[in-house]
Image (cartoon, rainbow, N blue to C red):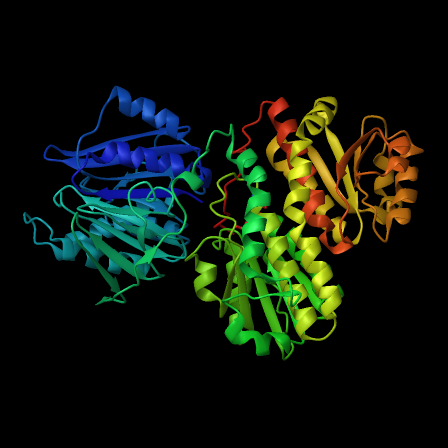
Length: 619
Ligand code: AGP
C-alpha cells in the first residue's frame, strides 16, 4: 500500500505535499518522491528511504510551484530505489504520475509499449501506466499543440480501461500548470475541498489540516481539479458525488505529545470505548442501538448463520466474535480467514450474513472474500473504521467501529473497538432473540460500562509492564496461550510482538500444548499465559503447571487479586475482574504494552515496522 497526495491552489505546494506524506507514511515508507510545476516547468525529487530523507533532499534543492503531487511507497514491483520511487514520467517526460495499487497486466502493456518504441527507466508497473496515459494523450493531441485538461482526462480514461488491477493515481502535465487529474479503481482516493485550493489524497489525514470537506471518489471515477473548482466523471460521463464533512480533527490524527502513534492509540482505548458506550448502549434495556442497523434489525434478528471474514488482527477479533455471537446470541457462527475463503468455492446457506471486519476497509483479501458473498447474493455487513472506505461502500450494511484514525501499523484501538462492537451486537441479538433476559442484559451493560475505568487501571500499571519487558526483551521465541475467549487474545498478543519487535511468537489454544509445542519449552523459551479467573481457570492452570514442570519461564495475564498464580509463575500482568465474555477487552491491553516496550528496548521502529504497511491492499 502507498500514500499519494496532490495539491492545486494559491500556496506553495511542496510544504503541503511533504507534510501530507508525513501523515500518510504509515501506508508505506521505503521510498518517496514529489513533483511540482511552476512557470519554469516540472521540478521532481525522489529518493529511497523515509519521507524525512525526501525532506532533506528538497531542503537542499527546493521546489517551486502551487501545483504538485507526491508519493510514499511500499514496494510491490521493483526494489526500493531512487529509480523505482514515484513520481514516474511518460515517454515525453512531460506527464507525471504517482500511483497506489497494482497494474496486474503491466508486463504485457510494457511489452507493447517497448515495441512501439518506448523506453523505461524503472522496473515499476506505475511507469508503464504513465507511458500508457502519455501514449493515449499523444493520440488525441495534434503534434505541436498543447493538450487541454479534458484531453488529459480522456487519456486517463482510455489508458486505465486497458489496465487490469487496482490504482489510485494523481496525474499532472507540464503543459497544464493549472490542474491535476485523479482517478481510482480498488484503491482509495479522497478529494479535499478548500478555499481557493483543492487536494487529492489516499485518505483524509493530509487533508484535515486544511479542510474537512471531502469527496470520497468511487471506483471508476476520474476527477479534474483546479484551484477553485473540480469536475468528476464516471464511465466517461459527468457525475456528482456527495460532499462529506470529516468528523475527525487533524489533532486526532497527530501524535499529541506521545512518542509513537501506537502508544497514543493504546492509551486512547478507554476513552473511545466510553464514548461509544455512551452513544449506543441502552443500559435500561440491556442492549445497544446501532443507528446504521436499526432499519435492518428485523432481518438481522432472523439470520440463521453468521460468517465472519477478516485478516490479521481483525481476524483475531472475528475469532472472539465467534464465541460472543454463539454464546450470547445463539447464532451459529463461523470465522473465515479472508485470504483462504476467497479461493474456496464455499456455498452459503439461506439466511446467512457475512460480516466483514476491517480497520482500513481496503484489505484486498477481505474485499475479495466479501465480493464472493455478493456474487452469491448473500447479505453483507461491514465492520470498518475508515469512513468511505471500499468495504464500507460495497457492503449492504455498514457498522463503523469509531476508533478514530489509527496510524500505528500495529492495530490496537481498532482491535478493541472491533471487540466492543461485536460484544454489543451479540448482546443486542441475544436480547432481541430472547436468549438474554432483561436482568442479564442490564448486568452485562453495567459490566461494559465499567470497562473503560478497568482499562485505565491496566494502563496505570505500565511501569510494571515495562519492568517485565526489560526482563524478557532479549529472548528470541515466545509461546502465547489462552482458552475460549482468550485464545484469540493469545494469537493477537503473539502477532503484536512479532510485527513490531521481530521476535518469533506463536499463539496457541492452551490445551494444544501437549499435542506437540510443549517440546519447545525450555528455560530459553518463555510462555505468556492468558489465565484470568474464568470458567476455564483450573484447566488453564494445569496446562501452566505442565510448562512449569519443564522449567519454561512464564508470564501470566491474570485477574487482580489472584494470589495463587503468583506462586506458580515468574511474572504477572494483572487485569481487573470482569465477565468472562468481556475478558478479551482487558486481557489484550497488557499484551499490547508488553509488545510495545519490548520493541522499544530492541530499537525497533514501532510505528513503521519493517516490511509492513497499515493496510495490505495487495494479494
Ligand atoms: C495488525 O496489527 C496488522 N497491522 C494487520 O494484521 C492488520 O490487522 C491486517 O492487515 C488487517 O487489516 P484491516 O483490519 O485494515 O483489514
